[in-house]
Length: 70
Image (cartoon, rainbow, N blue to C red; front, top):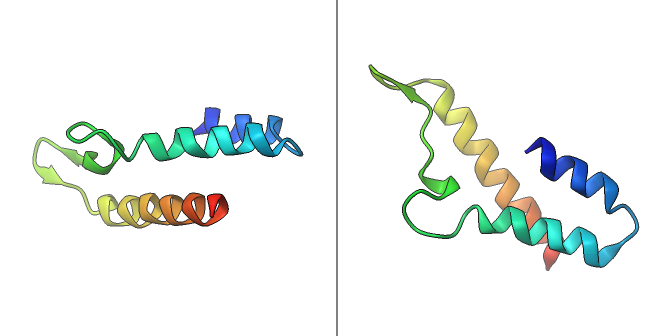
C-alpha cells in the first residue's frame, strides 16, 4: 500500500500515470483464489476482530479507486 501511495504521489498531475497506478490497485482484487479479496486477518485461533475494520477499508479502497477511474 505504501508503494501505491508513493506512486500516486509521484504521478501527481500526470493523469495517465495516475490511472496506471489505480488500475494496478484494482488488479489486486482480481485473480480468483489468493487475491486481495481473499485475505483474512486471523491467527491460529481464527479470525481476529480487526478483520471487520480491514474488510471495510478494503471495500472503501475499491469503491474510491473505481469512482476515480469512472
